Image (cartoon, rainbow, N blue to C red; front, side, top):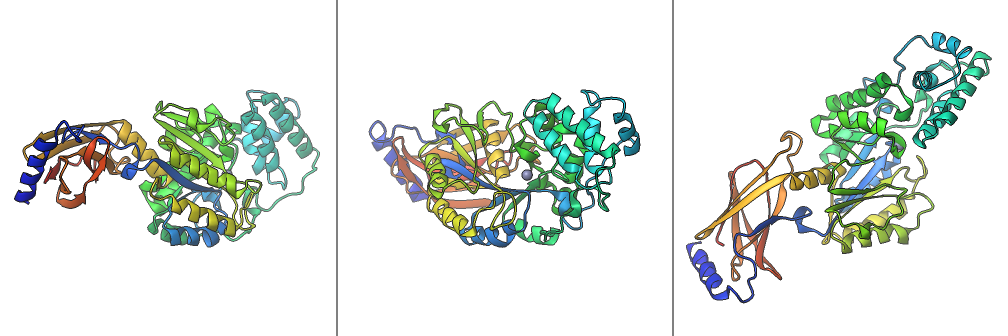
Length: 439
Ligand SMILES: [Zn+2]
């Protein structure tokens, strides 16, 4: 090793001012993990069974991790199911006979709508929620008036189960979920029952968010309480504000100023953004062609600031807008073929990476045959624990470098770019000095 230090030092003196444009020790945190050109997260909503029976085996064969936004109240063995928290529904129904729905009573009525002990009333909540989400509250009030008028006229049959649990479709279990977690997949919250949060009152919004989190925490652990998706891709500020108090990362929208967030309905070209990061959500539905889906990957691989967040719902006949397994197989093979350029990672990991990087401070000092790098970030260390990829320039003839942090030492081959010779390595923030030997 002493010899290699000497060789590198001599090489630096000989080459300075020629091919080595960056000084040994100059360091940056690469925009994406492993110095890749973009990131891709494959996300699934609603937890329908063929996501696990059909899509997971394909992804496991290719070693592609996924993120699943699950509706916890539907999973057998969950502690919390859907319920209405509030006054007895009889009192609410009675009041609707004399007071039309308005701004002050809408949320209570809409929260109770699925829990009146009647069949077919939940869909009124859903329809009203879509109107609120679209910024049309007056339309939502009309839908509530229509619902409660029918309720008072006894137009609905009674239901044994008052919520949406009447669906007896086979469902993934917590035991199965734990095996998928061990395979590297992320699980995340999609609330307890998948309501329109924007059409619930505060106490019922918080129940949907917090009780879903509690079940995930108890069954899977804290790591899986990081990400969430507010149902229906909601853009409602009030709903997202509540959700962001419970979950650090929402797929719906990222508040971070360094992220340009293009939602699924956004037609903006992601290449036109000059922000540090573009989070580009694309939803694959049955009418989306494979060439279009592939073009999203191509675009991400040729730019350097795009994070493609794929949104998939049903798979192989089960779930909303179900995609055939065969199509997913071909698509994921295509994605994997771009592995050299793209960091394929869970939604939570990409969020962590970009936030850690943007909140990091680092300093490197070259001293003799050694470079010392100090790397820290200012975020909550219990949540943001992902290693970052550092790029440090070394002297021009240096073939390999020993990177040491804590008790770990790795030997890493150097690479070359226009700035000169460099080494790419991963390091943990807030975990002590990183020492590069043999530079
Ligand atoms: Zn959903």
